[in-house]
Image 1 (cartoon, one colour):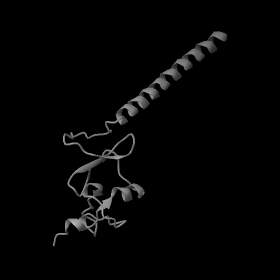
Image 2 (cartoon, rainbow, N blue to C red; image 1 turned 90 degrees about the vertical axis):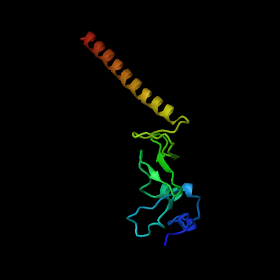
Image 3 (tube, one colour; image 1 turned 90 degrees about the horizontal axis):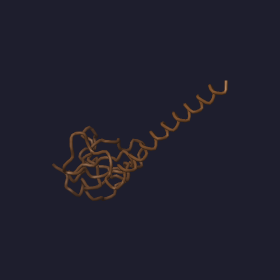
Image 4 (cartoon, rainbow, N blue to C red; image 1 turned 120 degrees about the vertical axis):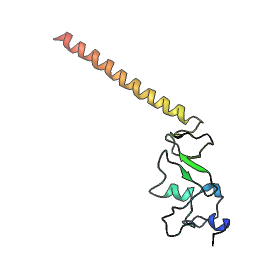
Length: 125
């Protein structure tokens, strides 16, 4: 028999009754399947955690993904494309772009300092 929605809404680790949109579906190879749902709190505390840029199915039928910048999970938008969503819209993309810009600016500054010091060294000999 198929388990009821109440049974599928229980985390198999902490045994807490959670909303279906905060429970990951269990792996079909798990011997406890279909009662192998795990809540996001237990997954966050586990050493494996969630991988970046992967879609994870929820018990509710929706999918979540993990942001590359902040590491928090977010719901996959309905217009999700084949190459995936990498950042939250609330500043994570801007933070990543700022960090990338700062990295390249530091690299350029190092090259300028290197060239200036090189010319100073050759000019003094």
